[in-house]
Amino acid sequence: MIRKSVWPLILAVLGLLLVRNALAQDLLMARVPMTFPEAMSKLQETLKKHKQTLSRVQRVDIGLTSKGYKTDKYRVVFFGRADEVQDLINQYPEFIPYLPHKIAVFAEQDETVLVAANPEHLFKSDNPKKQAIVKRWHADLEKIFHDMRQE
Image (cartoon, rainbow, N blue to C red; front, side, top):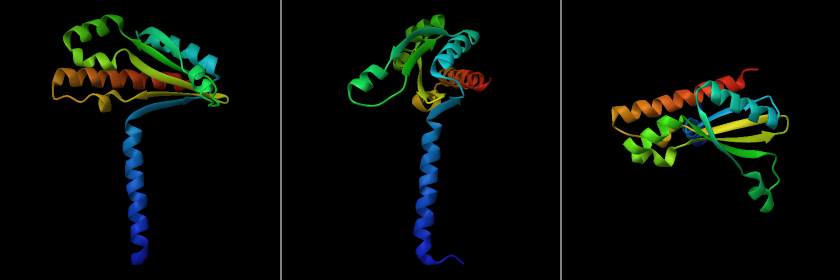
């Protein structure tokens, strides 16, 4: 039998686990056993394989180090299907803030971490066509991250 004084602790731990799990669903993440340059190169190849167009790569580490943060390499990769991006912007202007897609890439010693916002948590809609688009974006990111984890 569990003592009454232990119940608040058990409930607090369960609450933290539920919150942590909910927050984890907001992000898609892949840790790859590659150096930063290798991972950046493979990401570009993987995007091309999945018919995505690399829009730009933005350095973030310069701004962080100028503020006194110690950081390894850190980039944000912008990408999408060029024809689709323009069509969606014209058809659904509410998608503009979410396009092009973004993946944060940063080094942690000999590994590289990729992080993206889960599109299904960013954009919610009752419109079935919009839901299908966002589900496909999620599936595309999952496939890209899966391929990045493969050696």
